[in-house]
Image (cartoon, rainbow, N blue to C red):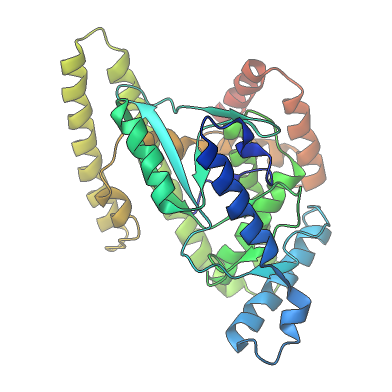
Length: 349
């Protein structure tokens, strides 16, 4: 399920407020590795030792990067002009936690980035150890790998080997998503940040495929996004049922029993949805991981305000600079007023 939550660690600064020294030191080492090992893409394209496949994909990156600047009005800077090879499947491992009887995620607060609902580690064993401590405290926990890593443009973020092999539409989507974070980032509002980047990503990929003569890939991309949206809706519905169950005036044991019933129902609903997809099993591993509140708490960050922000883009007649300005106007409101306005927008149409 997760490409998904990007690790918004601002260079070597954000880990400082961690309560453990090892989180700080692993943040420095991990960030330095990604920055130190990067190579300019232009040099790799001229390197006779570079594989044909890597060269082809980096040329695609360059094309998408220029499209992001000139057609999507995204930042023109040093990000994604370099490539880093990592000897691991993910850039970071994110830890999400929620109370046993709540779908509201635990938040951690850091300088610059504000408060976020996940915590990133560059090594899976460290993420698992931190997750184990949270579980001992009675929290529901999810550990998931993320293929992307971003410093929000504070440094020249490179393209990573962890996502270079993705299909063209997904590869371009990552660039548009991460550059959208550089275009707009509201401190302490993960839901708005991720929903905004998702809208820019989807709109950017659609335009890029059509303008680049890749319309034949559009149907497959839209089908995959449609499955993702159906999946997100399924999880949102489950989360709403859990939230209602947890708010009822019943005993803790009764809430625990209801929790199990709701998750069993979710598994049945997923099997029915998978059958409607012709047996596509791309989300099987997600369901086999042992779902809990943390899985439901994390899904909302990407999708909760997407419908509202799409309405906002439509109100700008698809003009992205107008859309960016409108989102910045929302950011000037208090978080309560901002979310109320977005909720009203999401209910329209």
